[in-house]
Length: 115
Image (cartoon, rainbow, N blue to C red):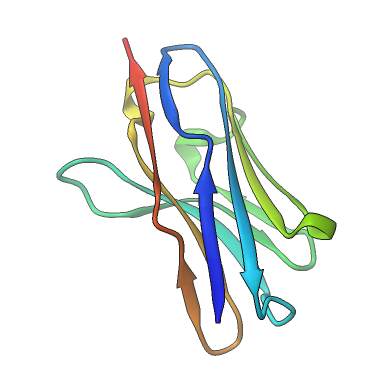
């Protein structure tokens, strides 16, 4: 099993920045991708950014140039640096990991951007 624990959410004004962290523990050596998803009230959960083991990344169009996904493999940490935040970025942000057979989710962290 893999356990994921997010932190770093909070309330920030539009134009501000936040850095989300995700601590991974358990059987993590088979993980081949880690991602950040978000879910706004009344909306479906959506993929924000992905980071594959080979270093490739993917960003949702609306966050390109503002968000950066990264990892510290030595510390089993995943990060999401979020800059130039807008109220549309308000959501619960979830950390996600996958290996060849399973998916794992964190409990989520709330990000609220005030206008």
